[in-house]
Amino acid sequence: MLTILITLLGGLGLFIAGMYMMSHGIEKVAGTRLRNILETFTRTRLTGLLVGLFFTAVIQSSSTATVMVVTFVNSGLMALSNACGIILGANIGTTVTALLVAFRLSAIAPLFVFAGAIMMNFIPSQRVKKSGEIVMGFGLLFVGISSMSSAMADLRDIPAVIHFLAGFTNPFLGVLMGFVITSIVQSSSVTVSILVVMGSQGLIDLRICMFIILGCNIGACSSAMLASVGANADGKRAALIHLLFNIFGTILMFVLLLLFAPQIELLIMTVSGARHAENAGSLGRNIAFAHFLFKVFQVIVLYPFMDLIIKLTYVLVKDEPESSTQEGFSLKYIGAPKLPTPPVAMYLAKQEIERMAHMAIDNLNLAVYCLTENDGERLKVVYETEKYIDYLCTAIGAYLTKINQNAIPLRDADLISGYFHVVSDVERIGDHAEDIADMAAYFQSHKITLSDEAYQDLSKMMETVHRLLERSLNMFLTGDMSDKGLVEELENKTDALVLEITDRHLQRMADGKCDVQAGVFFSDMINGLERVGDHATNIAFALYKAKMLTQKRSSNVEPAMA
Image 1: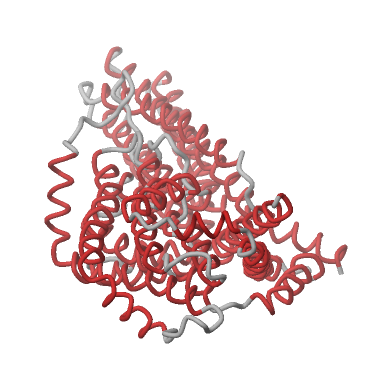
Image 2: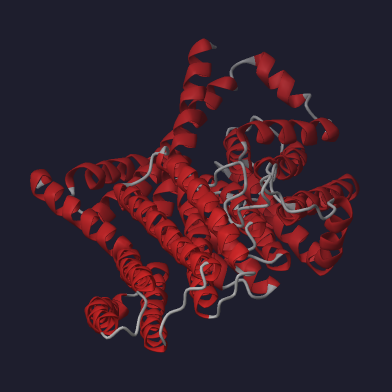
């Protein structure tokens, strides 16, 4: 019995490790593309459903999909109505794992493990290595299934086990068991796959499995519910949509099973093409198809009522004031206490950096406006915004550090390094805005003014710097290098303008057209704007340099491995 238990646990461990490796390998290879699909093609609920189905089927995890949705909704990147469709699709997509298990690929699984090992260890290409992780994960999944299957075959020779499973017919206990086990492992795919293996060995009946599957559906919501802890009201509502859908679907199917269990069993066996129990694996296939058909049926029936479910979430979760610091500062995209998967966390950090950058650029424009228009009242806004920028700098830096503490690919580590540099550059732009505000305050208190020519030069310099900031930020956000030449041209133009404006300024001072004290401030201001241009250029090329660093490392590693 001990040997059987050890083999069973070892097989389960290999199965879970295989699922994890395959899921994370897919995220590494295509995570960015999948996130773009998730964000772009969810304009309607129906397209969201299809995207959610595809996304979950590919990454083999409805928990990852729903947690990502909760994170996006919490950050304001996705509307609740659009998230609803993805959640429905994820509920169908999660059935793919059990369907794969039911088709008994264990005989060729070692070949996948071997191929994955070759790809990961002997081929220098990083993309092939990551793909090898997917292949090996797929193989380990079925090696684990094979190990569990052989252990469960031995369980048939133990009368006590057979007697216990034969007497386990209470539908309420079945739902409770499915809920508890799935809540613990946080994966309905794992629980249902175990049922498929047990069914293929004739250890458990289809009818009780159907009730256990219903419990699994509710237990699978635990990940999204945990992710919503500390989220804003919409984030909590997104997780609640997932939970309510599965609760209502479970109640519906529970009643139907109590009334029409024989007919439902016949339908499942007909669709699965496994109507004869004596066929090897037929019962396991029936269990996998039961899981699939239940989900499809629930989506079809509840789809027209999703607006009502959304309204119910608004009743259950009231709007709450935005969380903020004592000074009134808050994070818009990265405020959730639980860190999502590193790729999603990096995406959200980039959104927060964009918000911080726009804040710094607007503050710089406002500071210059206050100086040129002698507006003392709005200087308070400049100083308050600078405090906000400093708060964001600290908060984003802490968030990036937290991401960096995870096991992430070198490419992502290099990108995070680039993000750190961008945050620092944006913060320095904010400091220059504060410096100009200080000058404006001094000008007003000491009744100092600049000549009309100086104001014109300042306006010309500011216009060029502003264009440089806009193009640089766009390069950082989009990764589009088509503006590379324009950014370099604008950077050279700011350098040339400094020399040109300084020469004219010195001439005005020599001619007595400009006050000496005002002239010193003016020179500092022009030089400060030139440094803003330098920071803008750093922002433009931050991710480009990170990618070049990654490529350099790859080229250094590849010959050594060849």
